[in-house]
Amino acid sequence: MSLALLAAACGPAPRWIAVALPHDHSILLFDGALHLTGRLTVPGEPTGLESTGDGMSLLVGIAGDNGAGRLAWVGRADGAGARVLDVALPGPVRDLRLHNDGNTLFVLTAGHPGGVSVRGTTGLTQQRWIAVCDAPRALAFTREGDQGYVTCAPGAVAEVDPALEYLVQQAFVAADSGRACGAGQSALSPNNTFLYVPCAATGRLLYVDRVTLKPWDSTTVGLGISAVAD
Image (cartoon, rainbow, N blue to C red):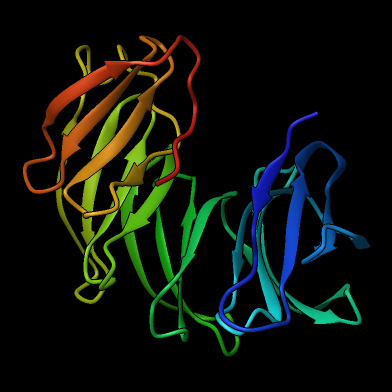
C-alpha cells in the first residue's frame, strides 16, 4: 500500500496528523498521540496535503481517475474531517504549498501545459497561473516565499516568480533532455542554497544550485529513489 504522510500540526494545539491512502481514495486522521480519530473519503487519489497555520484545517490536492483534479478544504471537527470547500481543476494535482502569509495557496497541476495555480484561501479561486511543464513532480519555495522551484519529469528544474507570474528560467539536470535522471519529488536544502533532486534512473541524489539550476554535486542513494524531504 502506498502512503503519503503529513504531520499537519503547526503552532499550538490542536495537533493532528493526516495520512493519505492514495489507492483507497481516503485520508486517515490521527490526534497528537497517534490515536485514529477519523477517516475521510475524497473523490480521487489524494496527492498533496497541506495544513493551515492554526492546525484547524487541511488542504487536499486530488488526482481524479478521469485525468482531472480537485482541491478540497477540510475542516477539523471533533477529530473528524468535513469538506468546507471543494473546487474542480483542469489537471491532476501533483503538489501544493501554503504561502507564509497564510492567505495564498500554490497548487502544482499536470496538464498541457502543467504549472502553478496561485489561489486565495478564502474561496480557493485562481488568481494567477504560471505555465511550466506537462509533467511536474514537486514544488518548493524559499523561506520568504518569493521564489519557487518546480521539478519536472523526466529531469528538469524551473524557477518561478509567484508574484510576477513569471517563469524565470528552466534547465535540464541530466543528459538526454533529463531522461537520464527520472526525477522524483525534490526539496530545498534547509539553507535554501540547493535543490535536492532524486534521480530514480541513476540512483543518485543531485545537489542543484538554486541560482544557476546546474548540478553542483551528487551522492549515490540507490536505484528507484523517488522523494526527498528537508
